[in-house]
Length: 195
Image (cartoon, rainbow, N blue to C red; front, side):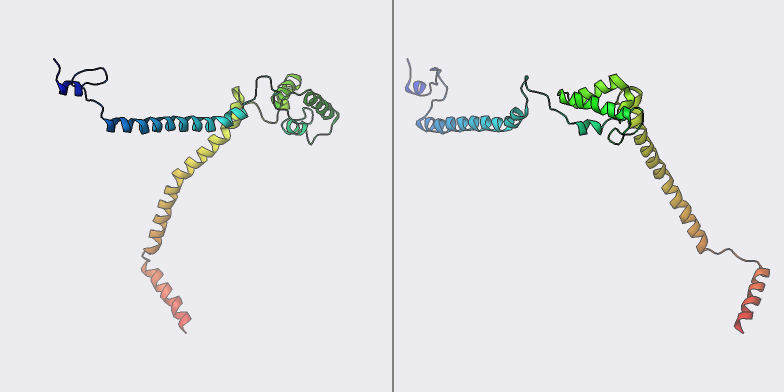
């Protein structure tokens, strides 16, 4: 036996006691569904806008690696016989090295590939900057350590210098007492200026 209130309070599954949907609740469900769909569409559009630059900048697997120029490589290497930057060197060995680089650039090698081939051919001395591996890391870390040590030394010494300067200035304001003989001599010399 079912009462009218029980069926009126039956939910979606016919469970007694579950609140029934009124016509007002059904009217609110449609705009809520539209809002949810609009939010999803906005999120998808935002994701597409954010992902577009990444998709455009990504190169396909079969695409060619970025090429380099002779000048770009020439600025990063040294003449192994002269010991000066290759772009300034004009020795026969430098001309040979330049010709080798031009062949590698014409073959389409990247700057990293060209530099690795130059290192294999001439040794690490061909690079204007040492590689940042192994002991060569000291080349980059020592200047930073020296600057930090100098700053720490200044930070330690400045307060001491200020204290010493204050002590000297405080000593200047309080004149030391002079002896009676010095006072008499001073008075005699000042009397000579009076007239």
